[in-house]
Amino acid sequence: MPEHTVKAYSEELEALSSEVARMGGIAESAFSDSLAAVVRRDTRLAREVVARDEKIDEAQREIEHRAIRLMALRHPYANDLRQVLSAWRIGIDLERVGDLAKNIAKRTKVINEFDPIDLTQSIESMGKFASIQLKAVLDAYSSRDAKAAVGVWSHDEDIDRHYNALFRELLTYMMEDPRTIGPCAHLLFVAKNIERIGDHCTNIAEQVHYLVTGEELIRDRPKRGDVAAAPPAGEP
Amino acid sequence: MERMSPDSTERGAVQLMPPPMMRAHAGEVVSARTKVSARDVRVFYGEKQALFDVSIDIPDRAVTALIGPSGCGKTTFLRCINRMNDTIEGARVEGTLEIEGKNIYARSVDPVILRTRVGMVFQKPNPFPKSIFENVAYGPRIHGMAKSKAKLQEIVEQALRRASLWDEVKDRLDQSGTSLSGGQQQRLVIARTVAVNPDIILMDEPCSALDPIATAKIEELIDDLRRNFCIIIVTHSMAQAARVSQRTAFFHLGHLVETGPTEEIFTNPRDSRTQDYITGRFG
Image 1 (cartoon, rainbow over the protein chains, first blue to last red):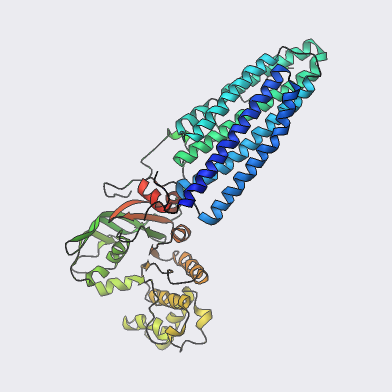
Image 2 (cartoon, each protein chain N blue to C red):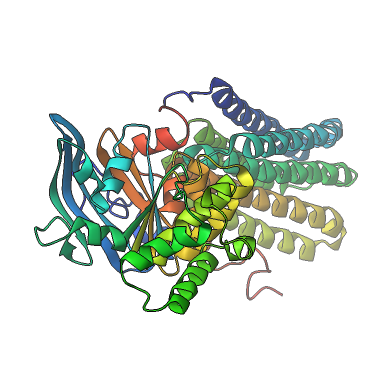
């Protein structure tokens, strides 16, 4: 794409994009570290993730500030406008991803006070899948790849399936041994947080698609039995 | 459906994703009735071709903005609609241009009569060096629209009200039109235009000589007038096109590149030339 006649305008837009990419990187590592903390029972790493959240919040404020400035001073149109809007919205989603990673880390500290549970393996594979989604959508943003974004968007169901399977597993565990209810309840929240990070990935995918094509993806994707919000049917 | 030149982009024809995944765009807010219809309009100034096969349908009771860099042909096209190009030595118009299905370049059409139906407002306000009242009364009087003095007064008052000027000038109708401020003069010119009850109002950068407040008043007036008229406005201000129009047409190097609902042109133009222009990447 040709440069703006006013070069500072192009530079400001580029700076906004880089800030989103930078924030994405921080959120991505916060999330993967929070997972590592759960899986490896690493309380120190968990603490570090909690402390890192402030950086993510700061990045979001920076993006918002830049976006407001661009709107007020440059009056962006067309793809420029979409660039500003999507950066703003992606910033909001990434900030939530950071919060959820922080919450996973906080729960890890509590879980680590109990005896180890096998279920961390299921958490690990679910988390890995969500991490791949997050990385893929951030790559799609950097390369302005609408097709890749649609790929992420349509894979969200897989995370939901993981979550449902894990939900059943945890219930079984808790029924078998009520002493595990404490850590299992926390793991359930960890799983829920991962599932929600998946939702934020789809939001970001929608933004990338809008940014590139100017067209919105419809939000209400048909889900195969929406069980993420409630216990699966037939369970006690 | 609009039929446009081969290099123009027809909106809606391109589907990036399968339809079930897409959200339909909001319907257009304007009347579906076509007022002005141009087909393959070409304009030459002597040897030089200024417009190339412009085809566009312009709806009634809506504001259509013509945008594009200087020399792109937007004003040339505007001037075709009331045959102002006839007055230019060596200018030649080809193709068809219809208002309500009637060819305005037909032999039987008197350009003077045509121009009462198609009013025009220029960049610089050009009131006659006469009183405010006479400025507005002139058209209706020469066209025999008023049978009595009372009727004429009624027409003048109504026109000044429609141009949102009445309250500011009602106590000084005898004063010269040129004694008004720039913004008031432009509204006086608009009152003069609407006094003869035209179908179409052409505006050629009507606010470029005005300050932001006077501009806002004209824009408010345009929004008001579109309920009764077909308005076509040439503007260099992208923000103004975005604010006042329901449809936007982008011209470049004498070609109509793209036309569509204003909201879409300013959020998601189809043609890269439109995109580059409105985002300030050339021009």
